[in-house]
Image (tube, helix red, strand yellow):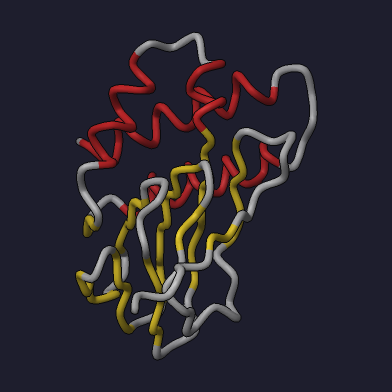
Length: 157
């Protein structure tokens, strides 16, 4: 008998996007899925395995992972991880004035794992997303929207 997969929710009800530093204490997790959001994970350090829908991906930074809503995943990391996570709800895309954002997200959503070369720009964009996400001004949404679009284009470059 297949047991129920736990569903985790790492973003508050009122937020539509969250950017954070990847938690150093995450090493091994049980298989789980996320509720109502898309997740972009950028690891700059660490090693081990990341399972997404029963497929094992080697964690060999710098590397990006894209977890769609409802996908089952878990970590089995051997070393302390470092990097960033962006959590993105559908409401963020729906609220966006940029029609390209949904298309860019759909493209990266088809790729579960991507090794990258331009680490300086990608790292800077994630850092800016984290910094901007900590402010709550009237312009925060549009700035986050712009940074996310640049990040997605740079990833696909």
